Image (cartoon, rainbow, N blue to C red):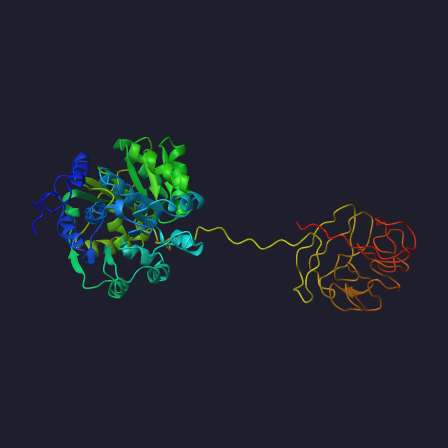
Amino acid sequence: MSSSFSFAELGLLPALVRALEERGYTTPTPIQTQAIPAVLEGRDLLAAAQTGTGKTAGFTLPLLQRIAQIDFGRQTGKARIRVLILTPTRELAAQVEESVRHYGKYVDVRSMVMFGGVNINPQKEKLNRRIDILVATPGRLLDHIGQKTIDLSGIDTLVLDEADRMLDMGFIRDIRRILPLLPKDRQNLLFSATFSDEIRTLSASILNNPVSIEVARRNTTAELVTHLVHPVDREKKRALLEKLIRDGNWSQVLVFTRTKHGANRLAEQLDKSGISALPIHGNKSQSARERALREFKAGTLRVLVATDIAARGIDIDGLPHVVNYELPNTAEDYVHRIGRTGRAGSTGEAVSLVCVDELKLQADIEKLLKRKLDSVVIAGFEPDLNAKPEPLRQPRTDLPPRQPRRKPEGAGSKAGSKPGAKPAGPRNGNGGGNSGNSGNGGSKPANPRSGNSAGGSRSGGNASGNSNGNTNGNSNGNTGGRSSGNTNRGATGNTADRSNGNTGNRSGNSAGGNTAPRSSGNGNGNTARAPQGNDSGAPRRRTPRPSA
């Protein structure tokens, strides 16, 4: 079918055509020309389409028309959701739902967007009202399913948008959990930039005799987008980027980094240098992401620094510049990145700052595009030809290391732990003594709570916490800390924890040698916390110490 058709000739309602014309769209793209009639007929669809081809309108327009022709005045019972559109990212979900609202401006169709990162309660409230088209990310949809706040039994049409990216992000399990909850008799539309084996397997399991569509972009990348590589050393990339922005007077630049940490750092550095910039990625709150996108689209933000995932859904007509600050790990992601520019018939420029580490990635991109990328060295930024490549930073290596759980100060550790651990200083005064977590090993002792005591820590060594004599913390020696030996807790002997004897629990001025906090040896020490002298009172209830 020729793309010279008008939207009216494709059979769309005048109300939809009017909304399109208000937004400046008068002629359908090739994918719209093929997809709209098929969807109107109720056929399943398998479409291979890159970003920028107009695929969103290709499925939203006919779906809007089918719902608009329903006479809701004759409907009985609770209104049901009729169309479910699943997308991989929040930004893409918001963009698709925005398109639904814009194109459906003059028809009685109600839509809703649903994604995580925001309070779920307003979404629950909205689900109590009539919703015809739901655009959602799989994770948040499953949250509602788990809480039984949504009913999917009335779905007539399922749309999987950017299915390849959903599989790349690991959503296949979520999708397979959602599919059984939908009616078996439904229309299915699947859109993907590539047809991998996984996509073909998924499509075979859900599509029924689909119409297959595979189109190139309306204007090819070579015609609309200028590709340019600037070789540069990795340490000089930021300085070169600043020079390009300032010398070219670039007012709206989308910059891609490989990691979230890299996006944060670059945006902060650019902002400090006087170039307004904000990062956008999955670790940012939804409000921060929306703010960055809003300011960037409005032109008040000069640079938006993004990762590949977050960039899905950034749809800005006339975006002039895309910069690959770091080349992506896969050549296909390069195509998705540069698809942010050269949209809706406008021209664009894709600039890549390539260091010696990324030469193989550049070769992979050129192989995919079946062309060499033009390369220009900027004066003052000539790369060091003798530089050695370093391993590339991979996504998610920027996560902070897990911190071990801190034990309460002075807490004994398990018997048998390795010797040589770092000793801790005393809390009050000059405490000390030979101590270890097991035997005479030198693991971390905690010194007495009050001064001038020669006792050991709460465990181990020649003296032990909660024990006495020659002992091991939490284990058996001549006397066991918190266990048995010559002395038992709550009993008498030369030393007793929380008991009587020559030395009492947490007492000072006891008779004899080494003393430990909460315990004693046969010694003395000015460790107070109880009446002085021989403590012969009843055992005291232990008060738990707060953890650190």
